[in-house]
Image (cartoon, rainbow over all chains, first blue to last red; front, side):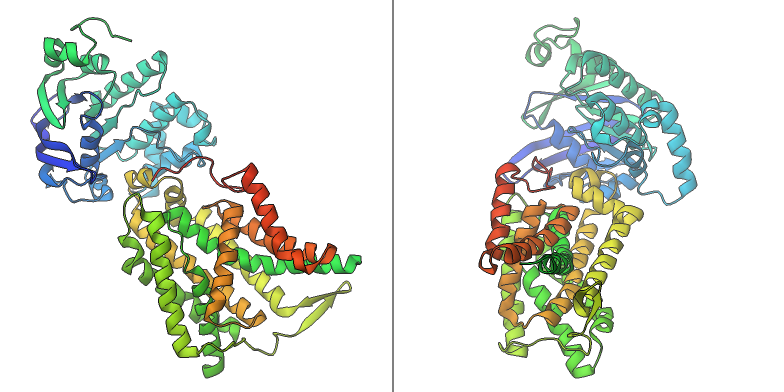
Length: 247
Length: 294
């Protein structure tokens, strides 16, 4: 069930030294919801997610999560608060086995019994983890790697899952599976913050949508509202609204 | 030329090469985890040799026993250098800047060593340094065999650490991809500091064996660092296994060419092999073919 604001971006300004990419971003991510951020290339979507996970430290502004301001905290500290990010590029350690990779998701957990229980759980949710346990992660297909990344991110049982373009480079069948898995994570009660180029499809399954443009929020509302906005549809969703997914 | 000479060359190549491999492993570990090219590694080897010298001459401590003091000492030196200088390097120019910064550190240490120990050559002495024993008609120098055994033990310990411990997992993850490592909760900064410490600590052992088998002063470090850098380039920057194989290969190839052809061509032979390998595999024998994710 979608409830109050879970993450609040307040005047977030951030960049990489060559100028600000985010220019005072303000919006709330509701608790328990699936929030999708869309926008053109270079609008700051990935940078925004990096500010949540601590990979980029904002120059100005605050990001509030469960009573903590995430700005200035390290990725490790943010992870401990229950925020897990799956980055855009495949992030599995290619030379390590699938098992080792998934276990690394519980790097912050010391209790081996807890780790074993969670391993059992993700093996049930993601059969690929058991099927290819001893294979090197680099030998998996792109879609399989993405599912193992999801399995790894669930090892910490996070409250907030941050996903950066999870469908990138996937075939339509795998893409459907990845979207179903994202919905499953959300249905388990986890808040999901998603950046997705496949905007129409992502907005359809999202509770909330945010349109970023030139580092600022251009529009926010329910996923359906964003999808049906004629201007946004023309600019970012292939020229029509509410229709079938454009390829 | 006879078979004994060839066997001797091969034996020396493996025994001496293993010590170079140990020193180069420290260098490649630092590069692999941190993208730092530590050109101070040569002078740190010499610092290790001088520490052994000081303990031996002034306190009468045995060279091998002294390693119990010099290895932790150089670990601390490494940690201090990392915290004071290396950890401050950021951004895309980090690797290039690291060459300048570690060169500056190298000059500082060299200057200090010249003041303390003067520029005169010294060599480490112990009753066993010039002793040898005979196995199957082949002479084995005690110090080279002991250096080889020590290198094998330390490299095995390093491998155990990397593949059997939780810290090792965090090092291997950081070697592969620092961003992904940070996203699973690995404190990449801490891992980097400890790896720099370990990378420098192994120079204590390498320096002791080097100092017992060669006369040295602070400027000897220039020859050493050029050898160590070429070893990790041949093995593949960031590859621990590559550094070991290339370290042994460097001395082995040089010695074999010296026996089969002429000692004049010994050094050049290794570089010819290096150039051929780099033409065929620009990333070195075991280096990664694509740029690593920073």
